[in-house]
Length: 104
Picture 1 (cartoon, rainbow, N blue to C red):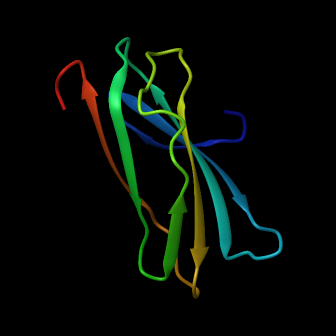
Picture 2 (picture 1 turned 135 degrees about the vertical axis):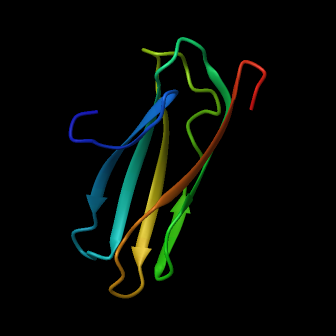
Picture 3 (picture 1 turned 30 degrees about the horizontal axis):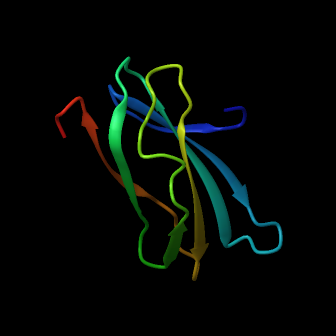
């Protein structure tokens, strides 16, 4: 997506973030994550868990789908809301699981 930053890439998928900082409160950040499939096979039962360090709080909306369409198809998108409760540096971890054919 235009203005997005590639934040993670594997042999199966790539993830982009679109980041918006709250103009009225610089400690609040909204991120729209977009997951794109790199293979010709749909990835089903697609789940992502995000983690942030101490001092940060994260709230995530449900993903748009649990099926990642084959290459060229629509992405899975998920909106994340983050808030810094101090002056802590932000880093994120993501745990991704999915089914490729019948393998997890």
